Length: 237
Image (tube, rainbow, N blue to C red; front, top):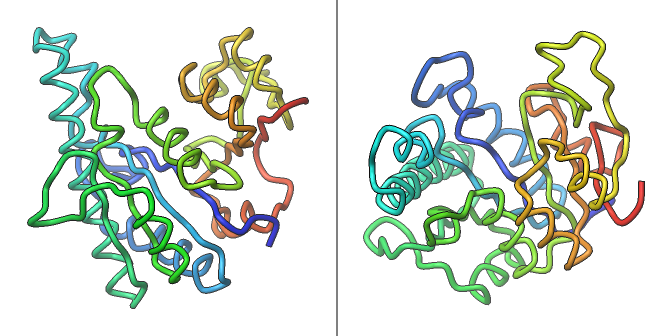
């Protein structure tokens, strides 16, 4: 394997598949199966999951909610997704721990960096919920932060497209896909990879980001093996 400790960022929308809202159990089971295969190979894996399939803080704020309250509700949505993914993994006998940045001791462990690392060293999949625990920060930023804290080799951002494009490929059939980009290019070209704070965190910690299509069979395993897949963001293009 090309990487020994990885952080996988899943959007909440990825868990709802073709549904308009909520969680598609079949999609979650397929993702769990791919994560299980990676874990079985000996790679240490942590996951950060978003909550946009249930509630998105920015959307709530746009409708008139207090932004901080809206973001906290969004954090709770990420915990629901984390617990759903945990259940899917444990049903296929993958030891899993959910850690949350907001205390929810009845259903999950609090986030403790050393404990998270120890879980991974013991072969457990660790799922981080509730983002960073702070409003005004995205789960992309939480993923970059957790990756730096646990000394991850790479951040995998699994999306619905097969990489980073110079424009929206759904709207522009001539959109160009990048094979590689530097952190600086992502920031200066304002490309939709992760938010600027997340990119800056990865840049400062020299953690590469690989963006790929989650819905291609076996894509998580291919990414972990270091195969040419999607777009890689790093020190230089």
